[in-house]
Image: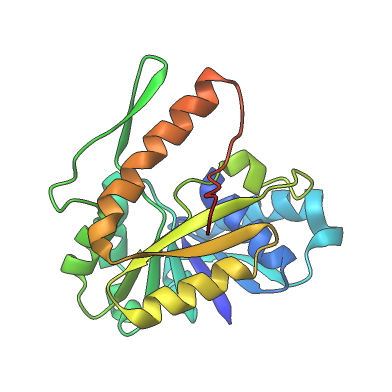
Length: 217
């Protein structure tokens, strides 16, 4: 499987792209500006070339959307607009949304209520021919971008389409240290996305890079 990361030049997209490439996958980190994407990939390769077992390339968002499985790593404000630009290339595919609706207030991160309940649900409503899943919300970007960080975490996956759930969980399993958990339908996405604010606030308060681990499962 090859993976495209739309809007992947930010911290979250970089970290995920590196982890997937280190797992031996073919990954295209996308951007509206392909030159920007190529520059970011060059920075990643300069630091981790000996640990990248797959292929990592900097591409335009249109090319990233042509991959077998696509991840959306843009900020939530531009999620629907960005997907609309490549919607024809996403029909019938799984699109994994990492976005959460968050704002910073002082030393805390707060979750806002999306009109559709969640970013993932909004994308599914706007693009019904695409199989949308939500995942990767609670992973600290800096830890993802450091292959020596010893990262271990549970990743909550939600989707309305069974294929979207299965393919996303399979993707998570490819990354060392991560365990996928089926959290149910996109009806759960609002709570999952909102909890990102709690994770970020705790990490700021304790100057930590904590991850989500659920006991008893």
